[in-house]
Amino acid sequence: AVMLLLALIALGLPQLPDQVRTDPGEANRWLLATAERTGGLGEILGASGLFSLLRSPIFQLALAGATVLLLIQLAYVFGAALQLRHVAQDAEHQPSQAGEAVALPPGRRIYRLRRSVEIDDAADKAEDSVLPGPELAEAYPTVARSAITVAAAEAPGLSSPENPVEEYRTLALRSPWAAWLKLCLPMGLLLFASAIWLLARYGWEVTIPTLAPGETFRYAAGSLELRYDVPVNEATGGASPTLIIDAGEAQERLPLTAGAWANVGGAIAAAEPATTAMLVRTRGSQPLLAQPGQSTPSTAIGLLFPSAGSEQALLLPRQGAGLRIVRAGDGRNEFMVEFYPRNSTAPDPILRVRDDEPQFLTFDDGQIVDLLPVPSVRVTVRRMPGLWLLLPALLLTIVGLIGYWRRPGFALLQDAPWSPGKRVVIVQSDRRATIAAVDGVLADAGEATE
Image (cartoon, rainbow, N blue to C red):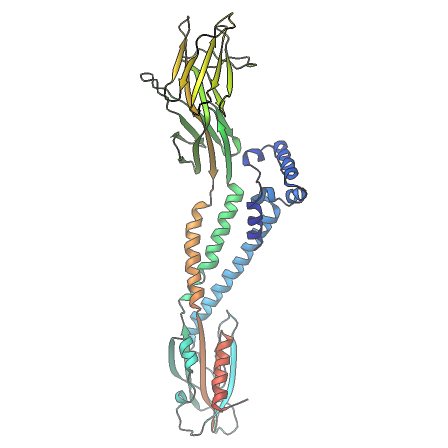
């Protein structure tokens, strides 16, 4: 209940991103800013760890407590199943003395009733004098009766206690197989708890809102590297945006389409096209491009254009020229590119670049610069090591609930001579209602005495 309450609270609260968690200073700034935005309770929520639920001390204590309780419940249910098994095995074979209850193995709590019953005719058969009533017949579909030779009771009126007598025993069972099914419920919940622990201990999630073309993102704590590569077909000039995912020793090349995802080294990466962007690159290995303030030229630069009218500037130090790129405002992914030659304040004629028509610029020295309109990409990578446990946990839980629904149980009735005109009846069961039902049957018949 505590874990569920914390999870419901945390669903409405921002959670500390894993890519921020690895930097203590950045994580502290994020927590302070989030607490300030949350309002008066922000400091309390932050101190209690609800901005990082899976790693908060309260949640981990609740998980540990739930695990201990489930282990106790598993041991209890296992003992109850063993008890029911031994009752069925020992009820007909354990010798005893008339009037003495059969010793039952430990497990569930056992309720017991012991009464003496008057009989009118000593010749009456014991099995006809005390039988499970209709209530017990409905509660326990399986009924087995047997006669066991036991030592006579040491009661007044009996000639010799050493003479053996016959004790009639009735064992009533209800769904004994379901006792073993009940084990599945705590086992399934323990698997759920194990999955949560693995997720909290070894799981992580990183989200990169926008990854520009040619950009690289690294998450050292998860041995993760993402590279947004844009290969170009030299024959057609078409670009093929591809996300290269390195997770540990595994690598995957994921073509960027809507809903693209891949499982790489146990990490699940999902990619979606984001805002409009452009990759400007030089053909060959000559670095020609630089952004304002960049000291070392690059061979490729990715530019983001989040809205219509956004513009970016690029320098070409070797040519002494510059580029001004503006995203058009007509609702299409179209760009206007202005080229400013060396020693000129006026641009050449505007070059229009559409998302389906890549363009290029050729300079006097033979160098070529490609203008490739491609979208930026939004990437979310999750590592959930305990995820595979959820399916067997769910199946075990459902099977265990069937065991609880069938409600396994037993009732053992013993009927033996006690004294002239009397017999002794002993009833043992793991349900108090069964004892009350038998007691009511005897009382209604007017034959029972304390």
